[in-house]
Length: 307
Ligand code: ADP
Ligand code: MG
Image 1: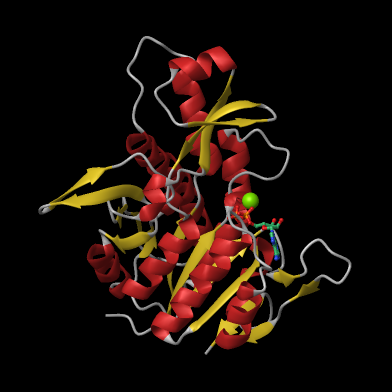
Image 2: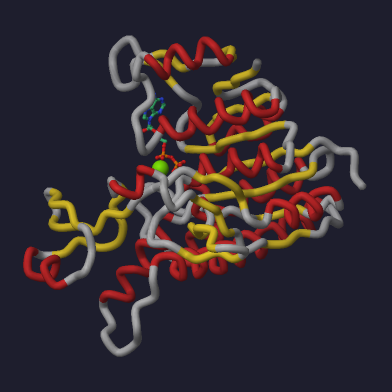
């Protein structure tokens, strides 16, 4: 068993697709080069777990399904599973190259991940998360989905229930103990509910930062990093008095949450994810820019919360 500390890094959408890009396979592989170099370097001193989002990839698959009537459309849980495969494949390819370049002989593996949610979660009654393509009024009327009307057309909305547990956390923990770099929890995991001793997939999406926090607590990570496209969490975001937060205590951060500095759907779940981890483990958690991961691990960048 390895004694190196365990870091879980949750990668944001920009690790795969940058602003203004279409998201071709070439673009995604190119974007992964630098982050995977960082993972390869970190793997000398840390055991690393990688999680990541899947919003644009899942959205594109849903759009592809819409444009073909000859084959049956797959439900959201299956689409989520498809993205775990495609993104896992791209991350593994990049990571393999980066490890070779760094002269590191490390094993790695992608784990198909189910995230258990509570079928009585009140959030199921209030679907708010838009997914998939935009529809015209007539198209929307023909679809069996809950829809919302937006400026660009009608869009399907699904629930985003809270993650309760990561079904594969024991497998992941064991792999991490043996110093595998594990890629998992893609897109927050495939949402499932427990039915007796088995699981059933449900039509929902799970926030990747909250699911990553759940896993980081289950495997008792020493450090939890959320890498995104801003330097950290700021108070008074978008206002002249905006201020980036550096090191903050748990209590101070909870105060900022109460004051409403972190909106739902972007910074809100990230801060909630960090707070849950720090409360649950007593360990450090940080949110930083994708380019600052090594500095953030060293305690020199990002918004860091500790007890
Ligand atoms: P990711 O794809 O990495 O998960 P998101 O787009 O969901 O990232 O969230 C990051 C975004 O949150 C930033 O690009 C920024 O525009 C937005 N944001 C909202 N409120 C804040 C805040 N208080 N501090 C920093 N960023 C914020
Ligand atoms: Mg984003």
